[in-house]
Structures are given as C-alpha cells and as structure tokens.
Amino acid sequence: MMTMGETWGSLGSAMATIMFVWTMYKNYFPPELNGQIIRYSQKIKSFIHPYIQITIPEYQGDGFERSKAYIAIERYLDKNSSKQARRLKANVVQDFESVVLSMEDHEEVTDEYKSIKLWWSSSQDIPNRQSISFYPREDEKRYFMLTFHKRHREFITKNYLKHVLDEGKDIAVRERQRKLYTNNKSENWYGYKRSMWSHVVFKHPATFGTLAMEPKKKQEIMDDLITFSKAEEYYAKVGKAWKRGYLLYGPPGTGKSTMIAAMANLLKYDVYDLELTAVKDNTELRKLLIDTSSKSIIVIEDIDCSLDLTGQREKKKEQKDDKNENKDPAKTEMMKQMEENKSSQVTLSGLLNFIDGLWSACGEERLIVFTTNHVEKLDPALIRRGRMDRHIELSYCGFEAFKELAKIYLSIESHYLFAQVGLLLEETNMTPADVAENLMPKSTAEGADFCLERLIKALEQAKEDARLKVEEEAKVKAEKEEKLRANKEEDEKEKGKQDTTVDEVKNT
Ligand SMILES: Nc1ncnc2c1ncn2[C@@H]1O[C@H](COP(=O)(O)OP(=O)(O)OP(=O)(O)O)[C@@H](O)[C@H]1O
Ligand SMILES: [Mg+2]
Image 1 (cartoon, rainbow, N blue to C red):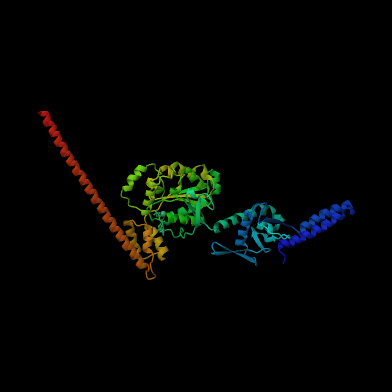
Image 2 (image 1 turned 120 degrees about the vertical axis):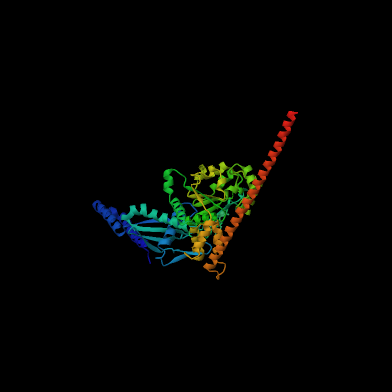
C-alpha cells in the first residue's frame, strides 16, 4: 500500500510528465494559449498536490556520523507516533534491559500539532549498483519525509520542526545510559585506548524520594536544581557560565554522597568523581576539566582531605594528632598519603581557576559539588558565594528525617513509638545512616515494632555513651587543670624561695 507521501509523489510525477510533453510541443500552440496553459497548470498542480515535503536524510554531506536531526526525529517518532505504525523494528538497549520500538521502513504515521495534521514516513533508497561499501550510508540511504499542507509552511518550518528536534533531544537525554567517571593518573592518559577518565555505567538507586531530610529543605534543593537545569537563557542573559556550585558539609554518614547520586538521578546527569590526589598539577586539572561533557556533575569528595587548600600544612599536622571525633580510617589514610605523596601540586589558585576561571566556561550545564566533614577548615576563598553558590548542611537525624526513613524502610507514617524516638533524637546525635541501619528489617520476622524498639535501644545507648564521654572529658579537663594549678603553685613557691635568697644575699 502506498503511503500518503508516496501517493502525492505519484500524482506529482504524473503532472510533471504532462508538463514535459507540453514543453516538447508548445511551439505548435499559439502564444496566448501557452500563457493560459502555464497559469492553469500551476493552479492544477497546486490543487492536486497542495502539500509540501521535507526530507531529512540519515547521513548528511560527507559525514560518517548520523545526522543529529535524524536521530532526534527518530526519538520523537518512537515516543509519539510508533503506536500507530503496524510494522516496527525492535532495538535492544542498555545491556538488554529495555527494548525500544521504532517505525519500520516505508511505514507512515500521522502527527498532530496545534490542530495541524502532518504525516511522517520513513524510507530507504537502495542503490541499483552491486557494490560493497565500508560505510552504511553508501549502501542504504534512509530518510524521514515530512508531508504537510502548504498553508502551514511558515508555522511548520519555524515552530513544529523546532518542537520535534527539542523534544527528540530531551528524550535522548532522558533515556541515555548515564556514566560515572573517575580520573586516571596522567601516566595512563596516552597510548592505545587510554584516556583521562575511566567510566562505568552509573546506576545508583538513591533519589530525593529515598533521601531523608527535612521536607521543606529537600524541596528547596530540588527546586533549585530544576530551575538551574532550565535556566540556559537566563545564564546567557546575565552573562554567566551555565554552572552552579554546591558545598555539602556535615559529619560522616549524613547523606552527602547519597545526595550527589540523588542529584544525578534527578537531572539525568553524568557524574565525574574527581580524585584530586591523582592530579599532578594545575595543568592536568585543566585538561581533565576540558575533557568533561555537558549535563554532568563534577564531584570532589572530602575536599579538606584531598588537598592542602588552606596553605596551613603545619597546622594540619598538629591537628592530625588531636582527638578527632569523626575519625574515619579511610580518610585518615588519605590524609597520610597526601602528606607523604607531595607529587600533587594542585594549588588553591589552580582549583579556583578550575571552578570559575575562563576555562570553566567550556561545556555547559554543569554542577560542581564539594563535600567535606570539616567546613571550618576550608579556605573562605574556595567556598565564597559565586563559587559555591549553595552551602548545604547535612546533619544528624532529626524527627522529620526519621519519619521519612520510617516511611522508606518500614512503610509506616505513624506509630505509638514515634514520640519516644522523637524525644531521644532531640537529646542525642545519631546519623541518618545509623538510624536507617537500625530501622532496616534483617529478616521477614522483624516487623515495625521490633525495628523501632531496636532503634530506641540504640538511641539510649548512644545517649549513655555521650554522657560517659562528656563525664570522661570533664574528668580529663579537671585533671589537666589540677596539674596546671599544682605546677603553678610549685613555680610560685620556687620563685618565692629564690627571691628570699636574693634578699638575704643583698642584706649580707
Ligand atoms: N539522609 C539520608 N537519607 C537516607 N539514607 C541515608 C541518609 N544519610 C545516610 N544514609 C544512608 O547511609 C549511608 C551512608 O551515607 P553517605 O555515604 O551518603 O554519607 P556521607 O555523608 O557521604 O558520609 P562521608 O562523609 O563519610 O562520605 C548511605 O548508604 C545511605 O543509605
Ligand atoms: Mg560520602
């Protein structure tokens, strides 16, 4: 069966044949009649074929890459019109996880936009000659053909095509397989198949729905991210590079890394996890930046451990010996490595340039996220507004966050034990990670009552531990003070003795 496009194509060809015959014999007709024939032929042509056709080939010019417009239209049609087509092609994507159906060749579908009807068909020209080619485009020339009434010409070419291309691009972004990158050491940057970044498929299950925090604060962050992702024109208008910096700070286990995954899942961005200790110097840092793509989050975790950013290495060494309540063996190891391995010469100014120097504007729609457990250790220049636009504190679990965790882990919104948990959370600090661990049923026999009681016990234990710690610290402090006082008394006594001796010597 002929498609709409093909039917009009045949009528057009018939008309062309008639016109061809007329041009051969027009000298036999009087000139007035010829004028009439031309006028009427135009009218008939436009009456029997009042449609315009636009062809979008899969490959353009000499390009070996598929045309972006063709790909966007393919996506658009798959999503919007493939239900109408009766012959479909199945493409298996994303590690055999899903099947995308698209129109077979010579199928035709209709689309409607602002009450205007249009026809899309997919076709393929197969060359007659028998030849073998390396390039698919030489064997088969696929194209999409759009047919619409000529009175909509202006609207279709200006608005509809833009709408199709934009939507197609959006679908491609939404459905693409996202990646998690990490930087390689520069010794591995060159040679066969080596590159600056290695990647795996990004598949983190965290979303803002599973992230427990105060609902209002969570909503604010989500709104901020969505506004950013749609603000291309705004950033262009105010003359700023289209990027945004977030600083996530708080004790270990409060959800900083989880929030980064939730951000990536919300905006469908790739994640570049930048390991600063593996970057030799500022030049390497810049090269890594240039090699990142748009629609991505560049993450530097534990920024205070990754680099000597404060220029106070000596101070840090002293602090290393101090009692640190949040000692994490992995991070202590990282600090140690950093102290020993001085090969990384990335400086604070190098990092600042990375964030907002001229080079940072290459590529667009990017988030830069820093995380730290010790915000007070960071150089103010690094985290001033404009560089890190939003500072988000992730802290110990409050009652609101607990309720969210109970909903996620136990599927309950209220319980008679909630009040007791609420009181205990006010009196003691427990991270969402620990609360979640206590709430998670370890077997099917563990119901909500059991898990909440386990949490209450853990909170009481944490409260008792904190009380003992305070007592212990007070005792140590008192002992120190006592020692100081005794030393002072001793010194004064000694001084008194020496003064008396001097007086005696003077008198004699
Ligand atoms: N706010 C939260 N909501 C839900 N789950 C959380 C939250 N905070 C922590 N968790 C759980 O605790 C685990 C540890 O959290 P995460 O790795 O995000 O902490 P972090 O703040 O990055 O810690 P660190 O400072 O050590 O890197 C996660 O796997 C997550 O399941
Ligand atoms: Mg983390």
